[in-house]
Structures are given as structure tokens and as C-alpha cells.
Image 1: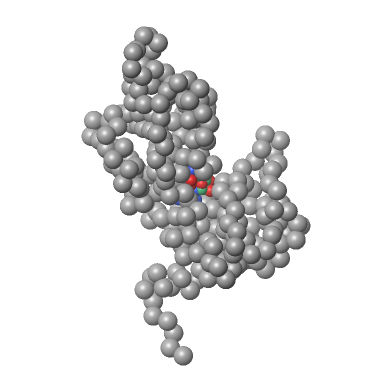
Image 2: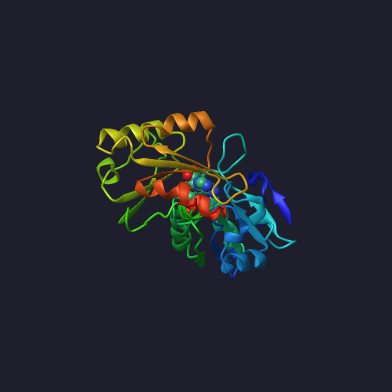
Length: 274
Ligand code: SAH
């Protein structure tokens, strides 16, 4: 396989409008990182693709499932790397498909969960380009399973909320705080490492108890996975102390209190004898 690290230099075949049979785009969710968590359909789509456009959250181990002769183009967004703005990614996909090339658009987790996959397939639909969507295991599910947090354990949670801690253009975290502090609920926040202090402060201000169990799950499912648990009040200091870096999820709710016991079980420890 060949890698194109800087998608700005990727040459699309000329005269795209003249092609009779446009290519097809397959939006594939790559899961949280461990290639064993790819779906069979994702593995098949990757193995067949000649051209793969992938994001920065897609692990190297996942990319190994691409065919030997595939071209892999990095279009992720990450500081200090050459990347394309979202409109250019969409534009590149449309031009490639119009020029008759089919491709896999590979995204971390699930493409429709905070992955902007919705915008991408919307643009494809508008341009009249056929597409398929292959779901992936989203980071929250990966983190729950791999770090031992049963997100909707019925004794502790009746609702599960996924939210984004991403900063808006005006430097605000725009979340419905009242909705996030409801009882018997687990809240999983994506993209919240940089805004963790604001998030915890706002949740407390809107009535969530300071001693609510909370966790940070970094690199879920990957060899470097870490799960740091504490309380809502402690979480920002714990993140600093442990140097937590993206990708990481914030998990808040009573279910987090079960994590140490479940993790011991997953590691095969014997329960203490009474
Ligand atoms: N579409 C992706 C989410 C993309 S948003 C999905 O469904 O999982 C990017 C955010 O996802 C990261 O900032 C982080 O909060 C979370 N994330 C992705 N992979 C992760 C992983 N392996 N461990 C922990 N968090 C992860």
C-alpha cells in the first residue's frame, strides 16, 4: 500500500465530469482503535478498496487491513500536520467519485457519532454520488467494554447521553447543562479533554453532586489505554496529574463506581475471600 501524508498534493484524474460511471463512496467506521473491533463488513470494504481516505484517529493497526496495492490518503485534522479543511475533504471525495474512482472514507469509531460523517454523506447525496455506510464501534462503547464501565447498568442508569465538549467558535462549550445533570443517567463526553475544567464546573453549578463518580478513559481499546477514576470534583486535577491527552472520553455517573471491581474481574483476579 502507498501512503499520501499530505492530501493537498493528491492528484485527482482530470476532466471528472466526462466520466460515465461515477465511483461509490463507502463510509466505514474504524472503531476505537483495536483492529479486532472492526466489523466484518469494515474489513471486507477495506480489503477491496483501491483508495482510502482516513482520519487521524484511525490506528495504524486498522490501516493494515487495507489491500497491498491500495492508496491511503491522510485527511485527518491534527495540529502540526498538513491537513485539509472539511470542505476540501468533501470536495476531494466528490471529484474522485465523479472521475470514476470508488473509495473508502475511513473514520475513527462510528462515522455518524461526532465524526462529521453525516455532513459528508449529505454532500454526496446532493452531488448524486452513491454511498454506503458501515457502522463502527463508537469510542464510548469501546471505553465501556475495555475499561469495565457498564454504561447502562440497570441499578444505576436508565439514560445514556453522548455529548461533545468541543469548543464553539465563540470559545463556549455549548451544552444543555440541565439535561446533563439528570439523575440515573450516564454522560459520556467526547472531545472534552481541553475543556474538562469548564465541563466539571458547569455540571456542578447546575446541581450535579461533587462526589458523583467520574472517569477519564484515554486511548480506549489501544495498548496505551488508561482509565482514571475519581469524583466530578477531582477529575480536572486528576487529568493534570496524570497528563491525560486526547483521544480520551469523560464518563460521568454512578456506573463509574463499578469500574474497579469489573476491571479486577477482567484482569482475572480472584475475589477476596470473606
Ligand atoms: N466518530 C468517533 C468520535 C470522533 S470525535 C467515534 O464514534 O468514536 C473524537 C473524540 O472521540 C476524541 O476526542 C475522544 O473524545 C473520542 N475517542 C475516539 N477514539 C477514542 C479512544 N480510542 N479512546 C478514548 N476516546 C476516544
